[in-house]
Structures are given as structure tokens and as C-alpha cells.
Amino acid sequence: MAAQKGKALLLKIGSGDPVIYTTMAGLRLTRLTLNADTIDTTNADSASEWRELLGGAGVKSANVSGQGVFKDSATDATLRTVFFSQSVNPYQVIIPDFGTIAGDFIISQLEYAGEYKGEVTFALSLASAGALSFTVI
Image (cartoon, rainbow, N blue to C red; front, side, top):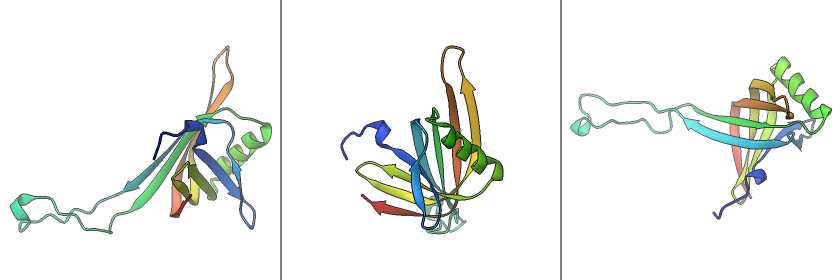
């Protein structure tokens, strides 16, 4: 994969039935982390005392974080409502020339900041709340 523009990595929130996805407000930084816990099965019979892991048995999770500026009051209101209700919502992370990861997430952190001579910014963290799917672009 060739180098891509960072702004092409998109985070979208879904709503409705059928689900319609909307790009999150003015994100300047977005990060997706995929995790897979391991189950250590090393025992006295392990070859030369090398660690052994049980394949396919660990818990998988994903975390998404982003920071940026609000483009309008509607997006700010959506994020606040979703955070305070602690509702699980569908999200998409679009990785250019790679694919789309989609699934349910919950906002685990929402932060506001501002400098005296600057704009108000926000940061958020999402934690996966179910199985994720991957679609190749």
C-alpha cells in the first residue's frame, strides 16, 4: 500500500434503520487499534521451556480514538447525547486503499479543550462492543 493522506482515514457514526453513516466532525487525528489477548498454555512439558499459546481462544477488541474540531452544533449534540446515554452505536472506520472496519462501539471518553487564542477542540475514545466486520475497498 502506498502512502496515504491522514485525512482520508475516516470515522463515521451510524443511526437509523437502515443504518446511515455520517462522518464525525472535523477529525484531525484518528487512530484504530486492534487487540487480541493470548492464552498462555506453557507447562512443564513445553519444548525447551518455550511459551505456548492457545490459538483462537483470546478475547478480541478494538479501540478507536480521534481528536479534532466540531464543524457544527449538530455533531457536538450527537456526541454529547451518545456519550451521556452510554448507548452502543454502529461506527465505521474507513482506511483508504485498505478497507472498512464496522461494528458496534461505545464512547468511553469525551474530552473538550481550548486555548485562549484558538478553537475549541475535542477528543474521544471508542471501545468495541461486539463483533467487527472488515470489508475490502
